[in-house]
Image (cartoon, rainbow, N blue to C red; front, side):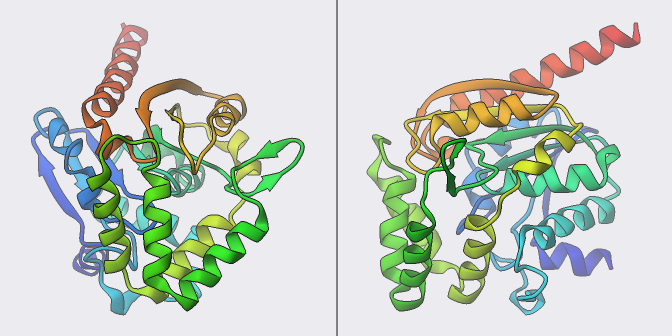
Length: 277
């Protein structure tokens, strides 16, 4: 069972600490997207990286369209990796849609998580005016998914620059586009549908794990009010607005991103010690 799960999600473990920090990537990406951030935690933590099913070097033979038709299947994978590695008090660091995978997992088994760190997060990418503006009208999403069917490379070349919009490093858009193109189109569309049609707003009050919401500046995929919405609806949340622009601060501004993650973890650990004393 352990070998199957490790192989299914291409789980990689490094670091010297006892406490585990798990980094999980977003749509169309893989664990390599954390390469500038995750290694900086290896001195103090056990670092867990994984490829979500259908992404990166995960086992494509294990991909099931029914299981991964919604976010629940991916969240279950995260719980199975945690169980297989016998992890406790996990600090979960997610980017984009994966923060909701971690949130769902933490609602199911809150005892397994100590912190949720949400990088460029969104509980829902669709607009539901006037109360909620997630960034996209339903027609926009339908056109995007239709483009995946008709011209997968064209979809990749359209979405990648949008995700890196406002970022001063154009080579990152090329890297992201290459990552999208290297993903199997069938699994990519399944993940895209699960991502863009998901509405996790009703789950937010059920999150009992302390959270840090990290909102990017000028994020074309996740408008600033979305981060504020998360902060207001998650009971134990803190909020920080990054100077990093675009949707991928762990690539464009990894030093700032890692610094805020570490600061939040350190402050939380200090508060725990002071309460125990």
